Each structure stands twice: as structure tokens, then as C-alpha cells.
Length: 411
Image 1 (cartoon, rainbow, N blue to C red):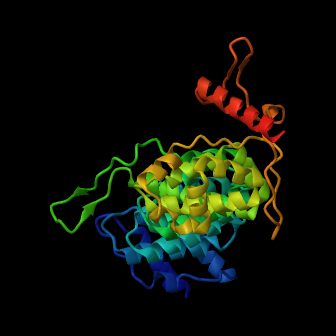
Image 2: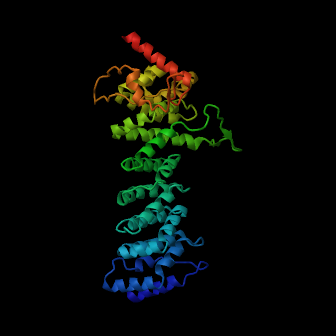
């Protein structure tokens, strides 16, 4: 076995970029479970530059995918031989080479083997686990959906091992939500469910709520037709709308899993954002996902129900309650405009939470004194009688006036 392995070593070292053809028996010849004799060969293999050669092979263009896969398998054997071997691979800029191979490979089998190798390098490798973690984050903007899916899966494991988050992970994960591939979206949402347990929770929730109202104009887009009349060109805003729908879905998943997160998102005006997404007639899935998520908030918080009912009006509200999932197919353009232009602002207050199976209770009266601490005043001018709440001044005065009138009528 040793003589056979030495022959493999010499053939590896003699490779050049112009003559790169690997014998497919490499991974079978290489010792899988290093024992005393095998350790001697492994050391000899490393001394002659075996790791560097294998990593160089991963970056060669004129080489078969099968041979790259075999090189990765050999690196897996080396990495599994112990911590010092994992460190050697990382010291040789291995994380970058393996990540690039995962991103650029056209073979899903090669990509999956690269994922296994990166997963191995993040375990039992405290000196370089952060390097692997950052390498996985760098893979998220990849043009390969498979690479995105695999990196998201491995990031969940890496995140639990590293224990702290990198600031860039929030934007990178949120950007992945614009994907058209449901398997990638699923993995992204699963990672988001993990990330809310770390210090980036608030930034993540703010990002999700912000995505509900994209900075593009809707209702005025016309699809462009390519030369082939049977094929429609995706509008430039489609990725933004896909991201909007995925954000609405993710918010629903988080809210259903943790009431505290639902309350925190209320502070971020999630109800306003969900209703605005429901009015996006250019993307039905945004309307559908937002409607389903809003239904949960309405069921959970009595005050949200009151605000939504008041904003929609009885007719549209009853239509919403009857079948939220299909609401987008029943509303007209005027009702869509009402949703898109809503001014709902559920403030901090005693909104309460309904327990499972609890009956609907009337929302508490909206008294100015009880709402004041929760409205995040950025300024208050008594002489000018203006409240600065992020909305036009006159409109805010009108809202306060209506609230006072309602209070007087009830009394």
C-alpha cells in the first residue's frame, strides 16, 4: 500500500495546469483511516506539497469536474486526520479555494463534497473556525443557487459553533431572499430563525420590516416581451417583489414561533408594512404572504384588529377575514390603493395578547395619555401644536383630534 501511495504522491506533484489529469483511483488509493504506517505516508504527502497541489487543482479551469471532486475527497481525508491537518489546509488559503470551487463548480456532486469539507473544517478547528464562517458568508451572494443553499445549511452549523455573529451576515441573508428558488429561500428563513437568538436580532427584524415596502413604484409596470412572443422578460423589479414576499413569509414564521418577536415587530410598524405589501397588485405572492401574516397579528393582538378594521373599513375587513389567502383575487384597484396607502401605526401600549381559543375582546380605548410614551416623539412643540411622528404634521393633528372625539363619544 505504501509503494502504491508513493506513486500517487509523485503523480500529484508532477501536475501542471496545462497537463492536469488526475487518476480517478486517487481517493481509493489514499489511506482513509490513518494508522501508524499510514501516518508516515500522510506526513510524506504533506511534505512534498500535497495539500497545496490539491488546492491548486480546485482552481484550474481546464480540468474535469470529476477530478476536482476527487481532490476535495482527498482533502476531506486529510482534514479528518486531526486538528493540525485542518489548520494546515486553512493556513494554505484552503478556505478561499474550497469556497470558490463551491461557488463556481458546475457539478452539484462536487459542490456537495466541498460543503462536506467546509463543514469538517469548522468543527474542531478553533483557530480558524471564524475564517470558515466568514468564507461561508462570502458565498451567499453567489450566482449559483446550489452554492447558496449549501452555504446557508453549513452556516447554521458554523453559527452555533462560532457563537457570535458577523455584522455583514444580516444584509447578506436578507439579500438572498430575492431568490426565485424556494429551496434557497427555505434555508435562508431557517437561518434567520437561528439568528434572532443572537445580537443581530433587532437589525434583522428591522431589515425584514423594511423589505415590506420596497423603494419602487408599483401598479405602473408593464411586462416587456422578448423576440419570442411566448417568453416574458422578468421586470427589473421582480427580485425586489420576491424579496418582499419572502420577508412577509419570514415575519409570519418568526411571529408564530415567538410572541416577543411579534411584539417587537409591532414597534417597528410591521402592520403598516404588511398592509402596504397587500396592496402590491404587481406581485400576487407578496399580497398572499402579507395577508396570511397580517391575519396572525390580527388574531394575536386585539389592538391590531381594531387598527386594521378602522383602516380597511367594514366591507374590506370582512373580505379579509373570510379568506386572507385569496384576498388578492377579490379586491379591486381602489381597495388595493387603500391598502398600499395605509397610515396604520400600532403604537407601544397595552395591546394585550389573546390566548389560544380566546374570544375576541374589544380593543382598549385609544387615549392620548396612554399612547404618548410609546409614540417615539422626536420632538414636541406645544406652541406650534405639532407632533413629529414621521407623518405630515396636519395629518397627525387630525388623527389626535379624531382619537379625542372618539373618546368623548364613548364617554
